[in-house]
Amino acid sequence: MSDAGQFGPWVSDEAKLRFRAFLKESATPSDLAAARPFFRDYNQRLLDKALARYAVDVVTREIAGVTVYDVVPSGGAADAPVLLCLHGGAFLWGEGPGAMLEAVPIAATAGMRVLAIDYRLAPEHAYPAAVDDVVAVYRALTDTVDPASIGIYGCSAGAVLTTQVVARLLHDDVPGPGAIGIFHGAPLPFAGDAALAQSLFDPRAETGAVPKIEELPYFAGADLSDPLVLSAGHPELLARFPPSLLISATRDFAASAVSVMHRRLLAAGVDADFVLFDGLWHAHHMDVDLPESVETYAIIADFFRKRLG
Image 1 (cartoon, rainbow, N blue to C red):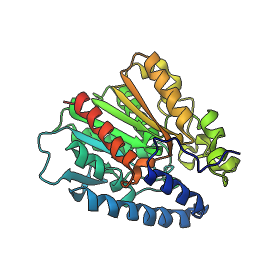
Image 2 (tube, rainbow, N blue to C red):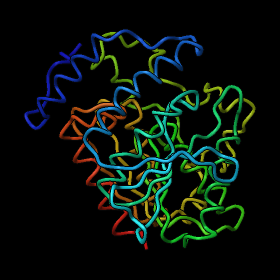
Image 3 (cartoon, rainbow, N blue to C red):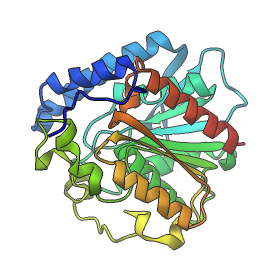
């Protein structure tokens, strides 16, 4: 087994320390009733750091019956494009502070309004509940905003959800967003070398440490061969996707899936960029203290500035 503490010389000291601390942290609670408050507290700590560093105003509102956190850079962003942020959390958690966390640094860095959507979670609400919520907010937003000026992005489960929303809009002949971001997740099995390599980086990792997309409660009863569920295997649908930015990291169990999704988008003729961070891990950019996180926000902001409006 390789030494998990070894990094390339380009990895920041902050990232090295954070990863080593991660290896010492207790495992995620296996019980959902315990996992939700565990992640809520964890995300709140990260959100507190983000709010201390990035000047934004946050208003909780309801759009189309869905709770949304409206995050705007201090000073406003009246004429800028609007982004929809879809949080991660295996479709099981990530609500509240987790949703805001993924929006705050992007709103401030991009100078754009970001609507972080608190979509319904499994197992109480299986597919397509989350898609329905995001599509409802999106359609309401298009009453006042040109779809070409709307971007959608998500991390992990939020990345998968982003692709599902695009597929639904295309299926329903609704004008889609001007661009999307697919970070640390893709509508594919979390398999390949990236999943196999987890034990090299995390000595606690076991076979069950890598989530299986087909076993997520959100997909209970769903047909995974349906292009509206997992679009990556349907090139005729992918060909209609908007410009896409994909981000992952070498210590991310989803890196292989994200890489394959990028290749399939390119094969379908889509304007697609892929950025891979060496030595980083799943959803690394949730921690605003990492220089690599700041770099990630700049990449995302630059992508949406160039593709929207």
